Image (cartoon, rainbow, N blue to C red):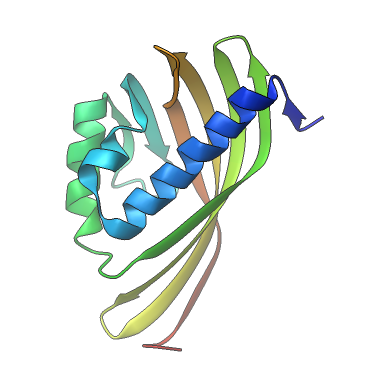
Length: 142
């Protein structure tokens, strides 16, 4: 079953996904950074120039630089599965991004395979791996 574990923990992980998406859309580095565990790992295998980044501070620094290329981004995320075992959870979520780059509107859809951990009563991302599913491009505003 794709959704297992205590309902309050599943809701807290949904809140984590929502907080992450909201922070991306608002380019809020503090709130975005607060979604990661101190010893987190973020892998972007479809972007070999970035690869895997380890440690919350390094992840935040990489994200700040990357976000300069995504002005006006609109980012949404929703869970496909949340499986909780104690203080750990395996999560699959999907994302949809819309942004303009160089006069072109881009729409990216992807999937995250995540491991979350509960630290001091709060769920955080311990490991995220992002893969592209679909990319669409068109004239700006279309």
